[in-house]
Image 1 (cartoon, rainbow, N blue to C red):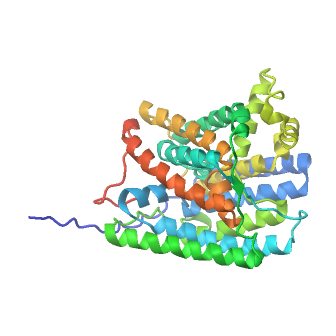
Image 2 (image 1 turned 90 degrees about the vertical axis):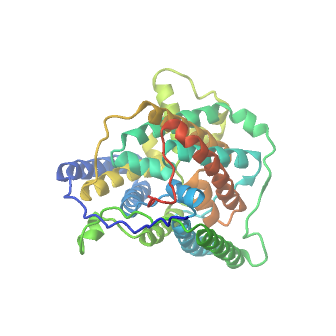
Image 3 (image 1 turned 120 degrees about the horizontal axis):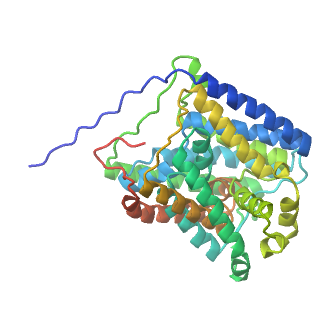
Length: 409
């Protein structure tokens, strides 16, 4: 005799009162760092810092997840988050086609992220997929979770920095490995209109596959985070996922327009680690990675002059402000040992993987696909394979995988 599992969508909780003290600290930190950025790097970098703050607000209020989305898809066949990714990518591709096609922006000749399709991409994206599930977050998720007070994710960020440093040390090896070809959908007679058409067809295909998987596996509903009532929801969250998708697409296109390149996150982590080592007396300037002229300039300049670092700081502070406004900022003081080990190991795998793959879920997957680069699609496909492996390893670190009888988050 079979027993049917009855599943219902959980009731949405009402957001608790704002944490006004934390909100004040976050706002003060945002202003102070903004003034420092303006003094060191000028108005354009200050604008990018403002975009970083907005990214943090959007990521937290929409709880926009890459790690959880792939986990839901692989574990129980729930494809809602992946389809929201596709909405974000469709809008971003459309906006990028205008900016890249016209060449209009604050920076001359904006360029997308086009990376080779080679061994580094495949191995790095697989490691990143495993690391996401062990560390509990992706690159963007790590920053906004740190801002909202998740102590375990601080360990993931530390692992990210360690992994990035290990990748920098192995730079000579990966430079000697065959890189493969750079493939852009815009390298056709139709240029960016043609690239947009190809991208939209791929997006529709992914949406169709996710719907087929979901129909066959009958996944549980997705939990909804607490939200404020009425118009207060605009400032205090939570927002629908589709709102987050549209906002992230617009902000990434604005980043391309303002800086000449799309949104990225993880290149800053290696810089932070190297700056710290230099501060304690280690001469990192002689390392092969820092001999590359563009990298050497970043190492020499203030970290507040680095676009990616400034935007990363903005994401953390923006998420701090958003979580305080939502009443959700909570410092978790105790982290179980196995969970902590998993967080650090996951961060190391992601930091190393992102550097050898040429980017993370943002720089390679989101911005790569929006830039019409084949490597972004390959990164996403292989990261899902890494997710399968990561899910198998999660129980070793005290992490629970979604089950068909549960709602998922």
